[in-house]
Length: 154
Image (cartoon, rainbow, N blue to C red):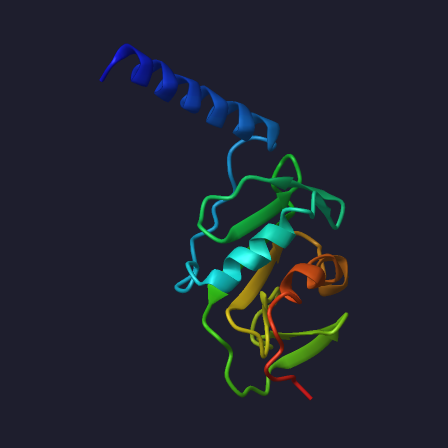
């Protein structure tokens, strides 16, 4: 490796560390979903970039492709968005429509993740702490709305 290439790699590493430091510490673990490389996820993530704060939480770095996260400094409250999850099929699970986007949640889970219904690729939002759908989903609908609705819950 030449001296110029080594300096460039060192500068890239330092820049990455500074960016992470500016995002509130270590990244939130968010594994990539099976269809994270779907071009629709790129559209969602471009629009999600505009959401600097969600439910009072600042945007922080996340680890997986086609993911985004917002978290409190102590990480006791987190919101993790993953694009490219498995599409929900016909279901009897709870469905709610928020600003024109349908979301389903498994009734079996105490704090369920919400998954878009009728839009491909599907996007999932999971929370920790005391956050509710009303706190989180309205702030994300504009990004998910970029994907055409093919079905609705009703």
